Image 1 (cartoon, rainbow, N blue to C red):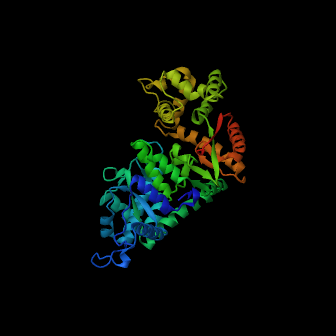
Image 2: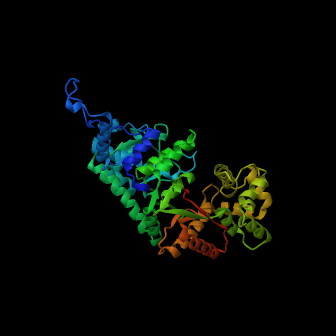
Image 3: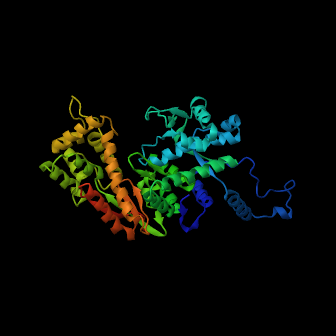
Length: 471
């Protein structure tokens, strides 16, 4: 788990979590009671233990027993008893580890409350390290026998993958999870080693990623404040998702992923924004330096010359004030009503703009659809035509080569900024187009990010703000 403020243990964090949200794990069947009444109910001296002392003794015993426990999280619907009975405890726990890997990595990769679906391409190297030599057999059983996985057409099967799979939402509930305690030496070792290996592989890719990994290692999390905050939220999907994420953080689920576009996914990326405020580093609050309207700005690179429309477009994208920036401009141009000071409303609007403009399909014979697409085409007809031409070249689908190219440029600029600062004492952690650091690193990060984008002939508007909750 991420280090807890005030030195709280995992046991203490989970106890508070279970008290407020309900436990997701049942006690082992052979759990011995700390104290039992003797005889036939007669009050002898040993029976005169007060209820308070029994509770204290039991709590101490639980803490002692839990000190070396290793838990994994599984989507609700897993019948672990049936799996263990059929496969045996050792092989059965390997199977559960495979399902947990799909579930946990998928959950922390999703940060939007309505995107609770979990998906992961099952790379053979990942599955083998968790499942051992029988990983292929276990994966096949997950698809054909238990129906916990299903083949997915979303990612083509290639020679470097054992297959592409998704968790089967028809069998499993991906919005609820259960906590399972590993009991076998092989199971505990497989999980611990797998987590360490993922971090080692991430850090070994480049000194930049080594710096990011070391910075993540130094993070602390205020579990008590985060749990209390989530407990006060109104019931609904937003609260439910945050409960799942908090339990994952308490159990030490840590993503260490680098995609083909150069974006890296560590713990801050998948955690909802309002939960990030409970992180800190070495007792110091965290700050984030963000590139405002990064993706819209990068699309200005499609202009072949410094024409009049390009200057107007960049003037809006790079506006010094947010209320005169790109998102406010698009809202007003489309006649839409969104409160951009509300994070959820702003995220909803941005998603629509990306879907209709930047990463939409190429314009068809019926013309432009969507209020934001129509507004963009009217205001920036040349850029609209360049975007459509690029889509035809790279492929018409969303997440086509065009979008991936823009993501690569963004990731490259952030990478270059961290490479310039990697020997500095303050932390550096990326959240796509943003860099998280402490107060003493803000000025350097702003300068390094600006320099990286200038290399790409762009001048971004950078916003530095406090990430960690004050007080």
